[in-house]
Length: 221
Length: 231
View (cartoon, each protein chain N blue to C red):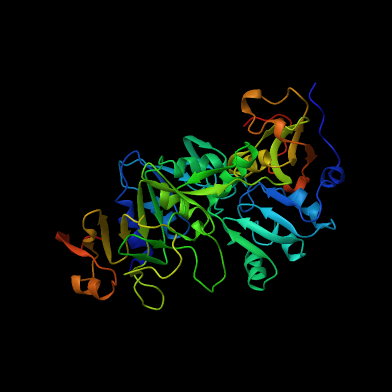
């Protein structure tokens, strides 16, 4: 049994295109690096100040000055480099980053994203997420379809404070893939193994269209 | 001959007074100026305002000053790696102002670069707009963010010379660069100290023009001690 996070990361990996510059959020999105398709080369940027992030170092070769934004030890591939935070966000905000993959608490039918604060809960902060959703050319939300209480994360309208307004381009969950088009809003294009169109309708609050050529059993086990 | 700015830590830190604003370099422990933060722990100061990406990592960093009651407010992109900051905020003992990471870096950079502020698309349509002017230019909306100019900056570099030219290592460069250029008085702790001319002029990340005092970092916070910097 493959868990939801692996299913999501594997499907997200198939979105990657050769030569893309990408930024992966902390947690689930980091797993996408394990699912880069054969023959596809992507360059990974980490907002704390490195581009060309390679595999994790061998045990014993970790270096306190070489880590990602989640403080995990990293290596650089040949051609990689380091830079300061103002430069890093020039890369992100300035439209030089092709895609960002982020988790979320909520995403709504207008493409609004709320992933940085739950009102009344302990504050963490938005980190670089607001800049990433604003500046990356394509914004992927990679997240479980429902919250722990079973409610849909794909909402009519976000109720938590927003990270970005109308910024989400693609939603990938363990159950479905939805892509947003300027004229149509979100379109259900793929349904994962084990789910039907009715299943998706039952766990999705946001309005969406079903693509004429929607693919069933498109990913997952 | 550029001035020798290497001073005892007590002399460098004597510029810090209660009520001041301090820009702090580092990123969840990567390049955090722990030697200078340790010294601040021994000082009788309070009501500090901190501009920093985060509060440190776990129990190390400016969070230690917050627990001592020395900090009034922190402006940070997140305090998720230092839960004590969030707890102190919930208890009403400290103010935490969450600011997008790129916006915070640019606030510091602009303050050091003599700019009054900047226009960013980040946070349009979110709470980041609150209390700020939104300006439309060529059909796109931007938030007008005022620059910040701090009284003091504390940073950590891998290598520095006696004038305060600094070189960082790996991802420890981060907020150290915008923080170092930001403040009225910048104090750098360096892991490896060099005489003038020993550092490659092509490799300097922070010019000594931005640095007012240089101190040696505590050995325990040094990643690599070496005689010659080789990247």
